[in-house]
Image 1: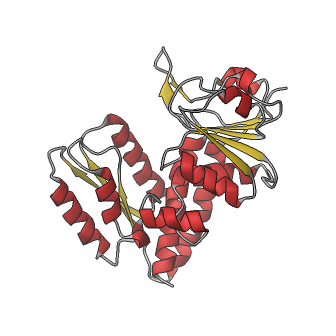
Image 2: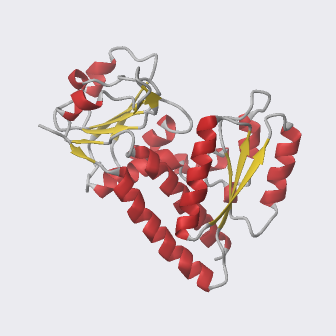
Image 3: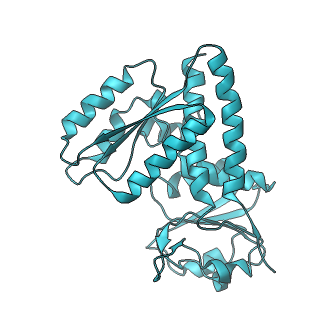
Length: 283
C-alpha cells in the first residue's frame, strides 16, 4: 500500500479562490476586509511567515498591513497598539506573530486582542466558544486539518482519532474539533505510556509535537489517515515533519506531506477567519 497524498497546496489554492470571490462581493458593497499583522523582533521564521501571510492576503483582495517593531519594544507599547487597532472599525482582524521577545507575556498580549478580531483563534473567548460549540474563530492549524479531512470525504463519525500533542494552539483545539465531528478522541503527550499501542488503534492520527519521527511505520494502522503538523529540520537541514514520511506512507491510506501539507492550509484558514470577521462586523 502507498498512501494517497492530501495536497495542502492545491486545497489552499481552492480556498483562496473562494475567499477572493467572497471578498469581491464585500468590496462591491464598499467593504474592504483588512488584517493587521504585528511582528516584534527579527525572528527569521516569523519574517518568512508574515511575508507569506501578506502575499496570500493580497492575492485574495484582503488588505493586510504588516507592522514591524524592534525586539526592544515594551509590552505596554505593544498593548497600546493592539488597543488602537481594536478600536479601528476599518481593521477586521489582528494577528500578533509568535513567538514574542522573552520580556513579553504572550498570554496577556493575546488576551488584549478583541475577541471579534481574534483571527488566530487564540483568545480565551475563542477557546471557550470552541469548547461549548458556539460560533467563534477556530485556530487556523487545526481548522486547516479539518478541511483536509473534509476534502477527501472522510467521515469521522465513530472513528478513533489520536492526537499527539496537547498545545493550546494545535493539540487541544484539534481534539475538540474532532470530537465535534463525532470521532472518539485520544490525546497523547510526553506523559503517555506506550504511545504506539494507542496510535496502532487509530483511524486518524494527528502528529503535532515538533519532534522528528515521533510516528513511525510500525505505529500506524494499515489504511489510517495521517496528518503531520510538525515543522522540523533533518540532519541535512531539509524541512520535515513529525512523521517518518517514507515509512508511514507505505502503511497509511492517506498522508499529508511536509512541506506542502498543513502549512499552506494554516495560512488559508487565516484568510477565512479574517473574511468571516469582516462579514460579522458588516452584518
